Image (cartoon, rainbow, N blue to C red; front, side, top):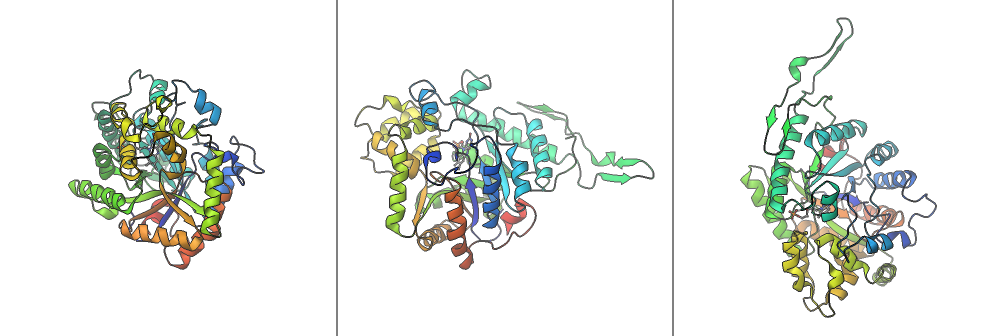
Length: 442
Ligand SMILES: Cc1cc2nc3c(=O)[nH]c(=O)nc-3n(C[C@H](O)[C@H](O)[C@H](O)COP(=O)(O)O)c2cc1C
């Protein structure tokens, strides 16, 4: 995907309304809270000003009950709750900002490929070619229960279904040829039936006749993102994705991830540059390193002590309210594996945190430490991003994630960090084309 070595820039705006960020100074001031579009339109304008590639909405359609066996804590603290469907926000944001792209999450475990192909075709038309699909297999119990599963589908089976889902969705996007429209007013010929094809797909999970009853969209199909970290996850990404998200936290594990993905790509005759990786990073901009630390301290203070454990429970499908004093993260490894939580991310934490830290101590820092951190002055931040980018193969870029509140944090990033990136020739000064795919490629 990313043919150039430029740093591509995205922001995860899934949790701006929750995760204690609403308590931060500079967050939501002067905007109606969550339900209306003005806030999101302004974020899109700011991202556009920074020539950022993409704004991302993650999604899980559930209310986690993993901590203490009920939704009590997640609702009390606003931990990933509430979760609106953000699809309707995208056309409005795309109207407000002509350059930035948008990524939306849809589950291959709970949705149907025909519905998915249709929705993303519509979004690609209305954004004029600026839509991406984060194809997820959904690892959360309460979400499974909302879609009628008493027991969550097994991890590897979810990926088998996802392989078939992607195959069908792509066949549907290919089912109508680009030059189908004739619009011959004189002879009353609307379109060429020879350019519209049934797909007649019969598989293990889906039977879909096709064709998609739609005109091909500007990008033909959305930019496909797949953030799987496991073997089957990386295989799915290697077959279909143009971008991956990753939460690796050290140059060594970043390199390992890149190498694992490249090996999977080689198996399906694709090359490393066909799939870029956006590394999750928390950016804390300040006038000095000590001021950045003070900002982080204020954010940590805004997080209730139990909140990290609540978040960890939702992520890993394990009840951390049962953690006894002195227990370590490693004590929960078997349980996370057995509960089919996000074991890939958990393993990364095991490799990278101080093994002597107790779960309580770790929980406190979970929301700030989970991903890479670039903190300090714009120069210090860009030094770090530049080093990480080249050490990990200069093939993708960064997605701002975790602990970043809007509007202030995204504005600070665009006003102070992006100019330094641009000055060093590391990021784009203008959009290279009208579609998201063109921008990611250049
Ligand atoms: C940055 C990032 C964003 C993600 N967003 C979502 C999401 O919105 N919804 C979801 O169900 N999973 C999401 N995931 C989880 C991944 O799709 C994937 O399940 C996870 O990384 C574990 O890998 P595995 O499925 O191969 O075990 C995200 C992962 C990362 C790293």
